[in-house]
Structures are given as structure tokens and as C-alpha cells.
Image 1 (cartoon, one colour):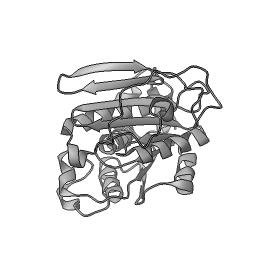
Image 2 (tube, one colour):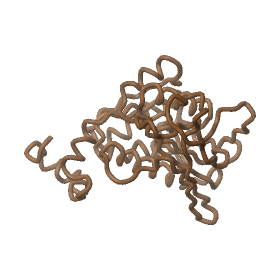
Image 3 (cartoon, one colour):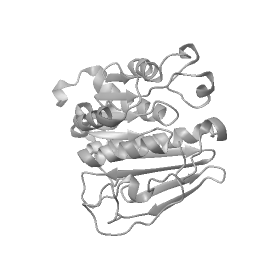
Image 4 (spheres, rainbow, N blue to C red):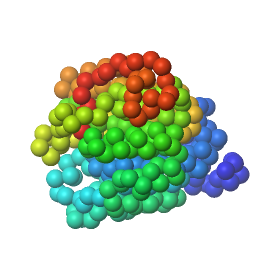
Length: 268
């Protein structure tokens, strides 16, 4: 895409990106050529999908096996009351099509795992973890390590949220397992039983979207090796630095330094 390729509507749609020196026409070209996989079309996946589609990310695969429930609508802004009972992936595709019809959205109504997960990760330029359970998070992380794909992971529960970037194309980048080792002993909190402040998922998901755009364009300094944490009740932010775990069973073939562990991850 060059300036001559943009029609008047496209110039208007992406004008505020094109005005950014760090992004500009070249960055917008990268976004329109990009393929992203969003795992989860719920609270976090909603702002992620909306902002990536609005930004002109050309190909979005939205994966979720669940269906829209009335209790979701308090925070999952990708869905509407008239789509209760519809699969979240298909509901999300409808919303994104209305938001930006130029974006190609693939609705994947299934719980990604095993070879299917690996294949979809392999086809993506970047993966966003917007799910709500540790098993899926670790499965997505393993697939991203296998295919050396950048992973943007977010989580939110009650009033606490966090987000980080695992640039697994970089030999020195830690993976999700380096920070949160997989364990049967970890207590997993769920929004359905514990609750979550509605705007919190919007805040964390929006940060995930911003980090994804930065990685896709190659601008700024992504949250690699840094866990950004928010406690919304006091509106306090904290950054935890961490490094590769040389003993990590997922990515131990790379890296040198031991990790600095963060508090237990919220489920999302």
C-alpha cells in the first residue's frame, strides 16, 4: 500500500495513525498485512479485537468456543443483548465487520488445543492471550515458543490486572512459563465466581492492543521482560522486571538469567 493506493475513505479512517511519525504510511502497511490470532473473545478479547480491527490489522482470527450469556454483557463489549446465545467468535465477527468492513475476520468456534492450536499460531504474525484459564495460557505459550511468535498476554480479576509481552522470536526473551511456572498447586480465580470490575478488562485489553500494534509495526519499547500490574481500587501501577529462566522446561534452550517472579497471575 502506498499513498496513491489509499482512497479518500481510507485516508480518513487511518489519518490519525498516518500522522504519527513512528507509524505513518509504512506502519499502516504493516498493520494491513498483519495476521493476528486472538485467543478468547470475552472481557479482554473485546477491547483487543475492537482496537485491532479499528486500527486496520488486516487479518484477525478470533477463537472462542463459548456462547454469549447475559452475564457477559457487563464487561464484554464485543457482544450485544440481541446476540445472547450466539457463539462469541461469530458475535465478535459481526461487531468487527460493522466497525471496519475492510478487515478479514475468521471466527473460530472451538477451544484451541494440540495440533489445531499449533497450526493457527504458526499462521499468525502475533498472538494475543485473552483467555481465562492457566491451562490455555500455557498451551498458547508453548505453541508460541515452538513457532517463535510474539505473544501479548493479559489477565484481570476482581480489581487487579496485568499485561506483558513475550517476544519469542528473540532468543533472550522469557516466555510465560518463565514468569508463571505451570503447576497443579496454583489456585485459579474465575470471574464467574469471584467477580471483576467491568472497566478493568477494558484497561488491560486496551494495553494489550497497544502492545500488539507496537510489535507489529516495530515501534517503541514493548513490555518485554516487564510485567505491568494495576490495582484499580487504589489506581496504583507497578512494573515487575523479570528475565529468562535457564531451567525453564518450555524454552530452556535459550536464555541465561534467572527470572524475577511476580505475584500469582489473575485468571482473566
